[in-house]
Amino acid sequence: MKIIIEGAGQVGAHLAKMLSNESNEITVIDPDPERIRSLSQTADVATIIGGPSSIPDLKEAGATSADLFIAVNPLQPQSVNIVSALLAKKLGTRRVVARVDDEDFLSPENKLLFKDMGLDMMFFPEKSASDEVDDMLRSTASTDTLEFARGKLQLGVFKLDDDSPLLDMTVAEFSQAITQLPNGAEFRIVAISRGNSTIIPKFDSTFKPGDYLYIISCRDGMPALMKYLGKDKLEIRRVLILGGSEIGQMVAARLAARKMDDIKIIDINPKHCTNRKQLVGTWYTRPCFPFANSLGNDLNSNLLQHFSKLRSA
Image (cartoon, rainbow, N blue to C red; front, side, top):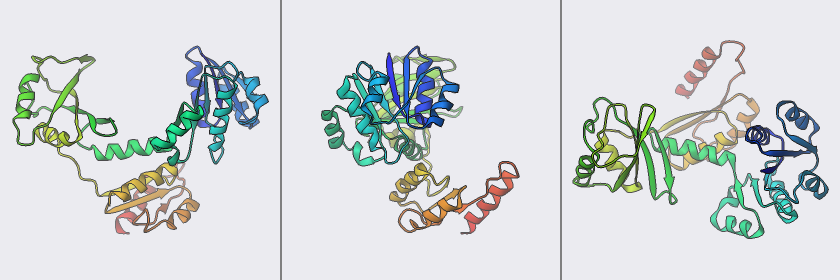
């Protein structure tokens, strides 16, 4: 596959290295000679020093016949990636993808608008990361969760401990027991992970200690399911976030919207904390605390010192 990556920042460089290992023909465009030089030393890819919206540079990279164009230029704002991707599509690239930094672009109506313009896909890495953290904090009773149909369906992963009520029970017996509960749930066990094996369960399949059950259910049915499994949902009210980056800000905003009792941020850069303090009362219930970069000194004692500050703040 012929792939063009526009942008040699962290995301672009990672994609270039990963995709080049899969026998793809990779070309990377970036206006920064230093980023291009660094990538050339670590990945077997073709590189071009050029502008993200330069039509001659896009043509030189092969946009007229490419299979995939990925625009991940680290410049701010990242709307330049949309322009670059649309130009590549008009030049002849089959599919184009753009990194964005505006959550409004990802609303259903706006995604449809960009789709009509020729942009096949947009992604917001920081939002994806914050969504993952938020989902993890919402689903403390399971090992992992995935949502489908805009949250209407959930896939949960549950480990059977030695005291689980399901041990030596069959799938049929488990289904019957759940449906007889006052608030019974409709669900399906789609897989059982046992050791190094994955089992597609049948009605007579028996549960064993240490099994991981992959169960899909309606969102409303998950509480009854977790209660029967003996998995108590941990109520999280106080959160400490290490890092005041964009991801940290987005996670804090989501948690604040859930009326958390206390949210604090520690950041390595005192300037970040100064900027974040302007948001106190809107996003955070407490200001963030800077701590020195003590990786070369005593990091543990430094963190403990600041954790003590957080407890007393």
